[in-house]
Image (cartoon, rainbow, N blue to C red):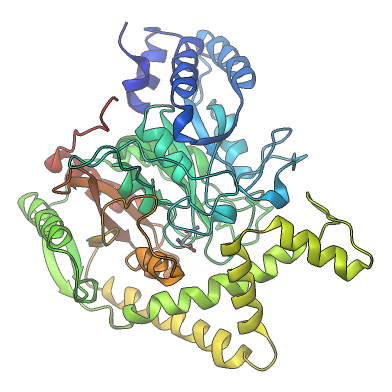
Length: 490
Ligand code: GLN
């Protein structure tokens, strides 16, 4: 039999329908792969019994011809989605033993579509980070290795690094991610995957542990564009339980992959060419532009003048929202509690023991920028700049249909290779954050390898709720790029 872990989501779906194998066989193959790859630390919690149980139910539904869109397909669930009866940690000590009594809407939607969740994947603590190194449960290892020195352990990116490593290492067919400033797209780029952050409001945030509520969005991480389209369709939809969930129709994303992008205008923003952009990334971007031209699209030089303010704006808005969202972890309502002589001491001890360094840093920044004396100078100012950034995109989209940029300024870096300066890490998201601030859909797809044999990604940005064009263009690029590389040993 073919190695079932090597299939795409689409091929596995079709194989199940054609009865070439069963959902139980497919699930067992992935559980075996997970067991062998524990060294990657991609999963916080494995749920093999639950998965096999669900796979059996999928087989029964498949036999009756009642299969859902994700029927019997093994996936990983980022450990930020609350899963009823299954521990949900956000990779924080403060939620180490938290077992939610409810299910997030996105994970419920996926289960309703028949998906088989095999476990909860690791992330940066509360999704704050770009490397998975801020997780309370240790770093995740990228299955990709440098050609020049395969002994160096590389980060998978973050914050959805456990999901990215699991999909790249063929431990699951696909996985969920969340993206606040790049957490789906950057790890997808570091691990040679497709990842799409849909428009803000497309996926319900209900039951997702909150980081920065005006930015957080869920999305799929997959090995192909078609797989992303399939999975996205099973995640999205209006949810009355989330007041920011948009009342928009759910299109057939897979049907959007027509292969025809003739006449489309593709914006190439000049501000995404900062001084010091590596030759490798510039070349990747040029190659991407050439692919689009060859397919009949027209590149258009555009300007997004406020781009340079995006990173500082994000690092005011996101910590502000984080400090307010994380106030709920007080030792009373959820998870960890460290006793103290007074109520205040109990709060302080609980939060000092429960939160890691990066999370504490963000809470401090957030509390500062929201404080009475600084609110106008920082928070209100950031909100105004955020609007200007969104307006730049709106103006550009009057003339172009989609925008092409690099996803990240470099390939995956080594575990101990970053200095201690948090700003170095924050710079990773320089290309993904503007899209997040504007609430637009953004997709990363692998289009080439670095000189050292590591995957590199390009980002496509679309109009609000126009994931269809983004996916359509991505699929055409995927075909011309012909990215077939896989991590060694896979
Ligand atoms: N790396 C960014 C941060 O640390 C984005 C994280 C995310 O998208 N969740 O905030």
